[in-house]
Length: 517
Image (cartoon, rainbow, N blue to C red):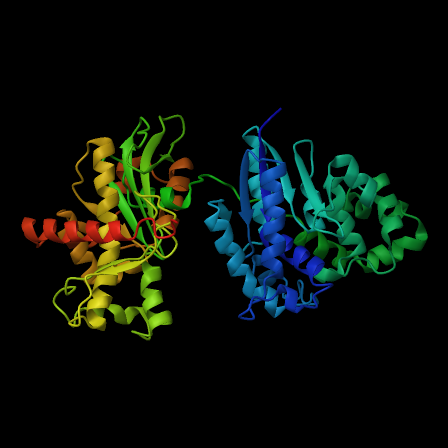
């Protein structure tokens, strides 16, 4: 029996579960936090996800989301014009659900200009080509057009636990037509939710009979003179509406030429193709990957071993990965919780008001420490406080915390691989902070390099796809496209570096076992 890829239609599932829990969209206090934040959509989505993980134990899993306007809206301005807008209290939960998926480390897919249905169709067909079976969890009957011998669709019932799996025969039993006829069926009878008018006066029973005899919409119109006279005029007058439905309903096939995880794509986009090449992405958290070569290195120092990439029939390339929970999120905390700054971009200016951290070290273990410690019971600490300290010292220590955590991970990587880092390529939202980048170079004692294109995840995916279709010849040709924007070189004495790092490690030790009895 083949392995199965489970694909979750994120928006559709959130929508269906939200309405199931709120009695048709009427929110109640039961689904509000103490701060008044709505939770029904998040709860419903999470319940279905956890049940799926527990009961079906998927071999592979991904969640797909909509992004907004699509090519259909540009071609057909009235497409879905009559559909009710998503309730405001559900709309604000979608980003929470996206974050939930990321927290579970489940791959998330979405593409500008296309509906989630299009991406689901492309991934499903790609998986089938790779020999997998596919199960799509959704609330959208449009996806029944994808059902075949290897693809099934699960639609929810009246309750969260009541779902039905549709195979080919189930689609025929439910709709009266085969999956490959669903698009033409919808084009004839119309779909009010998508504002597809259909052929006026031709209902479901007639559409089923016509498709049973003529198989496709095109063949119906090619044989219009043979159709019973009472429907000829209606079909002729509704031809434009039917062709409109036929044009907008099929799930657009997107060729998938390369597929990479988020951080693996960033590594690829930074052209880290040689063992010892490393990149760090500075965002809400930090994700540091080091190319460890064609043989996987099993970490003994708190890191994860991951597949970096594989090109065609070539040997796979592996990486060591270390993650930091709180990086840019700490700057947001200074803004939102302490009010030290009005905007995150102001933190560098504030931190530059002092020449150093004043002897304080900020360990942002708000919900524990990730690599290399994996201490879930650790909690945040500011060590070394005196009456001399002001808000500028705190801002500087907050920035430095990200650099110190990065050094700890790279130190673990060097121990695991025996490879000494020669430089660090950086990307993400925090790389515009020059004070942080300089301190990072000083602390690591290697150059820190920012590329001209810092959206390296998207760039890496494009590089992989371009290689697959022959747009680029090889890895060397990709290296020529990578360009340096700025390099920070170390400018700190060995003694100062050692002293500060030792004090940081001392501060980290104070955060351990905070929740222990």
